[in-house]
Image (cartoon, rainbow, N blue to C red):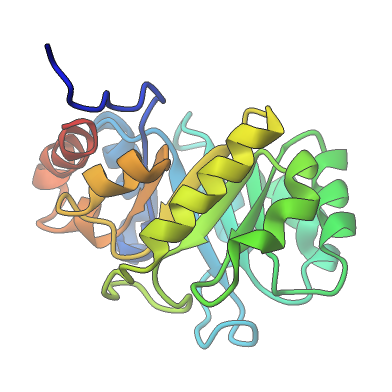
Amino acid sequence: MNLEPSRPTRRVRIAPSILSADFARLAEEVQAIEAAGADYVHFDVMDGHFVPNITIGPGVIKALRKHTRLPFDVHLMIAPVDPFVSAFVDAGADILTVHSEAGPHLHRTLQLVRSHKIKAGVSLNPATSADAIAAVIAEVDLVLVMSVNPGFGGQQFIESQIEKVKTIRGLIDASGRSVDLEVDGGVTAENAGRLIAAGADVLVAGTATFNGGRGQYAANIGRLRAAALA
């Protein structure tokens, strides 16, 4: 008799972060990751205020929208958030994720995002407790666990976040709602399986996707997916 625990049956999705792409050729890069088997395009939007870096705004997202059919998974690392929600929706965001730490009225911000008829997500920094989402679980379609401190790509994975993923999966399951659980930061083929086993179903992968150039994107994504399902 096989007494090994069964693997999760959730559909694993890979969301390459264009923060690690060739910014001189972004249109070609999003087309390349679509052809390579990506499920989403992940945008890390940083303002130099909430996090110590500046990346892109809605103009870049709008310019790329016509170059791919993949859903746009837009992670707003900005504060304040509310004044910019409409601009990112109009630019083509399909999922708009805000930080629980970015403002005093998280519930109101999530309602604002959902009023635009797109998916709303909430993100937690590494030091933020999983309990921070308990009061808003009914308002979200996605929870994003940051497994690095936000602001820069290429950082080392913070192991303690695996337990947070397990805790949040329990909160989601107890709610009875269909909520995706995404992990962003230091995701590799070496930790993908543990993250999926802990309860994640969407893996953001920047360096792990774009390493080696376009000729490697399909292999990189395939390696992540295989490791997640192993």
